[in-house]
Length: 130
Image (cartoon, rainbow, N blue to C red):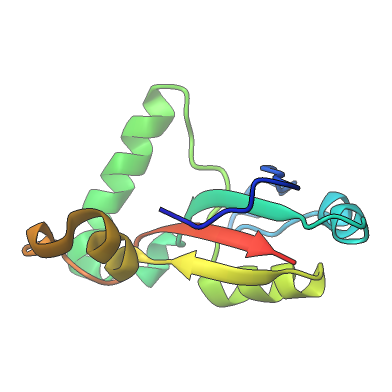
C-alpha cells in the first residue's frame, strides 16, 4: 500500500499515554530525533485514530463503542492524535509525512467498493520519512 524503501526501515514512535483530554501528547521524540540524525533514511510507519471529539456526533458513539470493545479485550486506545498536531511533531523531528486518512484508505483499499463508507475523521496510516 505505501511505497517503502527496503533500507532504513524503522517502525516505532515513542509516545505518552493520553493526557486525559483525548489527545495524545508525546512525552519525548528523542528516539525519532536520534533516528533522523543518522546517515541512512529513516522511515516510520504506524496507524492512529483521531480524538473522539473530531468525529461528528452521529459517529462518535459507534467509534467510542469500538474503542471500549478493544479496551475490554486488553487493547486500549491509549493515544489519539489530531492530524495537524502529529504532523507538526514529526516535522519537528525532521520527518516528512504521507498520511492516509479515511478517504485515501477507502480509495486505495476498496476502490469502487468504497461506496457506503462514511468519509470523515477516522483511522489513519502515516508514513514519516526523511
